[in-house]
Image 1 (cartoon, rainbow, N blue to C red):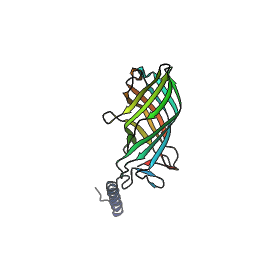
Image 2 (image 1 turned 30 degrees about the vertical axis):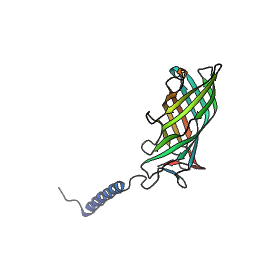
Image 3 (image 1 turned 45 degrees about the vertical axis):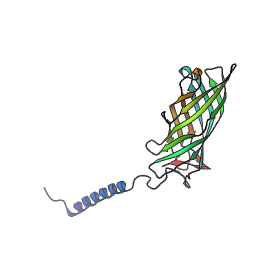
Image 4 (image 1 turned 135 degrees about the horizontal axis):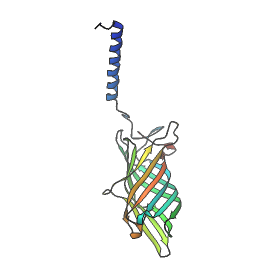
Length: 218
């Protein structure tokens, strides 16, 4: 077999060297190295910062999930507890829940209030896909009937499975982005048989804001 020409041999050697250098660069520089899990277009999200998001939800519960509450505006505020360097998890404390524009079906009761009991916790993970897992929360739904007011408390604790939302970062220009909860199960924490044993949450929330800046997960 004839030997390759010197020019062809040099080209092959350069291509091999380029492949080795590329592989070494990827091995030596993992994605997002040195970048915090949570950032904004202007910098790092600080520990202690308050982040806010607004969404719309449906929640089904009761016998055979026959009661459905649909809320057109659900506001959530969280405080950043930790924001380590990626890859990693950022811890959040859920401090506020506000709802409006709610309707109910499947019952003659009317929604009296939907409130957050205490402070919840959540964890943002920068894996694939990006996720936020609500690890502890207690949401009380008070319903009014001719017999008075009954309360169903749903959520999770450290001894139950978290419910998870999938995060999509905003596109270039800081537009779009979402957090989507799909068929997430929230166990009943307290309440009567009217409440059933669990509820099913579906909802889409906007990208959280740190002040006026959108928050990215790295």
